[in-house]
Image (cartoon, rainbow, N blue to C red; front, side, top):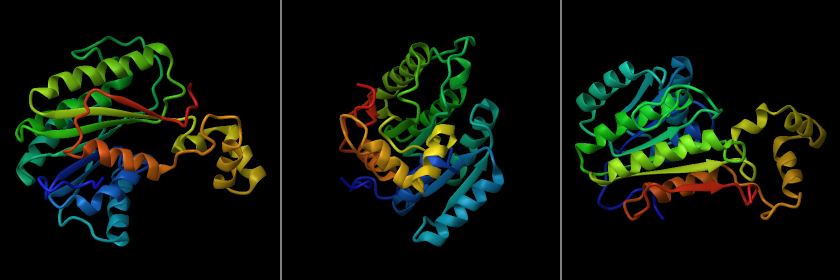
Length: 256
């Protein structure tokens, strides 16, 4: 299924966590169809500029690419970002919201039952959905690379946030879904694990290490790569998709 649909010829796309991991991969994938504009959000301004320059070097990019450097958990900065996007682009069609590593937290809950460790996701969703309300349509995807590691309270918080956002957005034809990856997916977090770094040294390179892991008795003897995740994102963003409030676990059966 193509990312761009016939009835959305010039989408404006926003991606948080755009300088690394799946956020950066999504920026590369979606740049070619973001004819209306591409907005990259991350906390590191230098990395954002480098990511935007890389997009330009790789091939066709939108005429307008904006980089917004701020902490996604900063509500005031999101208010500024909304004003900027309305003034420069007039609307927002799609958003990829990359969640940080989720750990249980005893923080206070706010409007959508969101504890402190999900503040960035919460404020990101609130902002992008307000912008999409002007179109009476839109699509947002939460990407979390911790599916196999979520403890029950952290996972419950994420699911509660997802369902509340999807329910609220449905009135304006805004679809909100989530992709949970880990275990059977090759996520950037693998490189942070000491045992995986040891395996890379033993096997010679990261791909060989993943192939070695894929030979273990998993339901699917192949680790999902970034391209697999990006194809699912394209499907969920498509106007043909009727899914909302869904959390797709992409791990090759690792958590079964």
